[in-house]
Image (cartoon, rainbow, N blue to C red; front, side, top):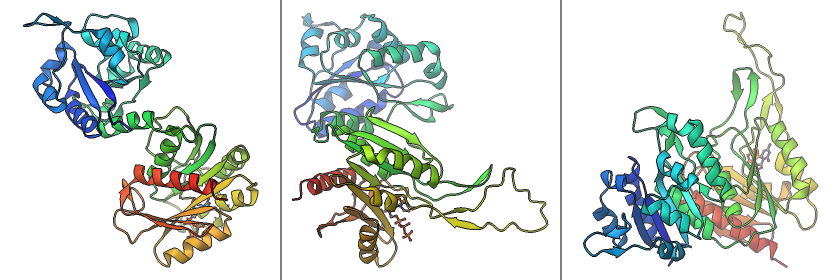
Length: 401
Ligand code: CTP
């Protein structure tokens, strides 16, 4: 998607500027032509030599090249770019961009750019949540700029919080998605993701290890290809990037069922990625169960509703329904049985016997079975790549006679 794309990489003066080198490398590797513009203070954090070596282009920092007197035209650069990425974006540069303070080459080019602008903030947590920064970021959003939200984690100050620049791989992903073919425009897709938590008492629950990564990857893939996505998600630790994804957070299987039953009639397709707990306590204690009890408490379980099966019964002609199966043995037989029993059009099987597949990992190895009898086996891939294959296969099913 990034092949031959002209990308301006704006680097500002923050410690995360060291990550801009990896970002430039990844963009060049993906086939993009990268022109780096640095603010004067960015040069304190990473050298222009590093960046020009990685991109094969002289880095621009000033309005004029000192020794030749050549003027660097921000207007030409603004017209040249297919996208502009500012990573890291400091509070200072964000403030200048929001208020049109064009006192350096980077902000001047930003004001001249016709292309979409992506801003990856990086700063200390208190700066990040200062009303001034919050307000300036909102302003950039209102100008149609895309904000690549910073992640939570340890910051340069050793404080823990929100403010780490998003990882270069994810910034490249956001750009790739932006340029992706929009073959799902006009379609509405329902996706379930993550685990469900079934409450025992106000502080305890029955859950599972699902990270939600597969479901969120499919949601991002579908949205980047133009779909409107309703993502009904159990408790996970992932953020949604694409504004076309509507997140409906739920906790229990019952709540997930209610959200899905309300949404599915308006959708073209349902993709059931959630690891729904099969059982829930038959009642929830309203107060914390105390250790001093004489008897060890016995928790009686009741069956949870089968969300995929319920949607399979609701399914109308023209609608599709896709399930996942995580199996440990008799994988193919069990997956095809689930496809049939839940009235699915396709099931994505992953086996816990395959290294790198299943919960928590960034990779997956799947075999897809379609109701029409096709079998598609894929090698170990990233969950993003698997998401791409899953969406491609759903589209191919929609085109089956
Ligand atoms: N599923 C669901 N609701 C449930 C259980 C499962 O929607 N209560 C969906 C999952 O999201 C997945 C598919 O059904 O798409 C298969 O889930 P899985 O847990 O593999 O199968 P189960 O039907 O729960 O059977 P088992 O756990 O016995 O293998």
